Length: 141
Image 1 (tube, helix red, strand yellow):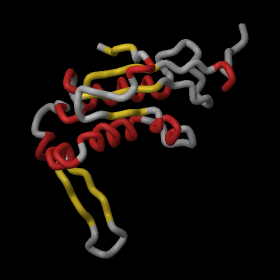
Image 2 (tube, one colour):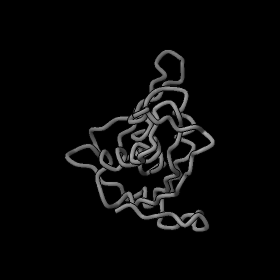
Image 3 (cartoon, one colour):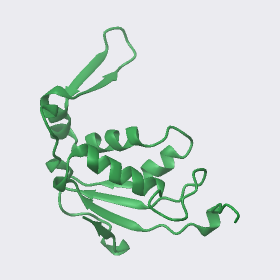
């Protein structure tokens, strides 16, 4: 039996919607990364980007376990000496709730040339409404 290798012309992408308020941030990021990579499909091929589109709603209501709301830190640096900035998870959610989910999913994806295209298929909304109703997304429980 020969090994199947999917071609880019054979890719069929689907749309999925997931509610961020139903599970912790880490488990949510694993499910999203799995759908973006296409690992849940039988036609998964590592060198081909055959993942699906994922819509995340209720990003402002994400859950975490333990003391991560205060203890988890996000860093950025301006490039100048002493230019490091630190924000806790609670501050990041208050400022931009999509950023916390985006960073968690980005950390779960392989660091290669396909990562940027996979992240482009992730749509995150702070509230319950989204603008992709025409795509008829399937709900992930």
